Length: 229
Image (cartoon, rainbow, N blue to C red; front, side):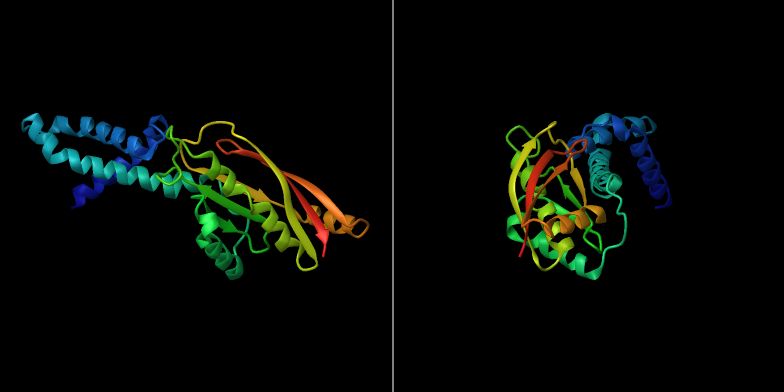
């Protein structure tokens, strides 16, 4: 058992070293890494090759797929979305409700973080059987739907009662195919909120353009109209 733990740890280190050279898709990533492990490990075994493969092939595949899945969901999935502050119980509960809301859940995306004051929101959209399109990448509609409501809801929460926020128009440009988990971070600073309030003190409605952009993410621009209720 101790030897197995050592071998598993060494395999994890090896995965971290060669991970950037492996394919992006989880299942293919796991199979390729299983092949690497098999090639490195089998020279020490002396039974006939078919027997070695039959005995050790499936465990290598299972181990490699487990590593690839853990890397995708626990490491790569969180690497570029470090929260800037804590969640509150209220925002955490809202996040859970949002993720179970059928219209949003149907996109395949999940909200992973809502800052306690609603000034920052993170979302995550994995490549899975639910979001995969005809050519094997993330469906553009899932990308679009995943980011669609976020800025509007953030402004509703940040402005508070007495204001109405509507998403009036939007445009999306897909920069590259989504071949792995996509993430987006939305942020609205206090200065933007104060500027909207100041402008609405003089005029009945304010139009604001927001752009969500990033590497491996869909670029999306939208226009929000804010009214005094």
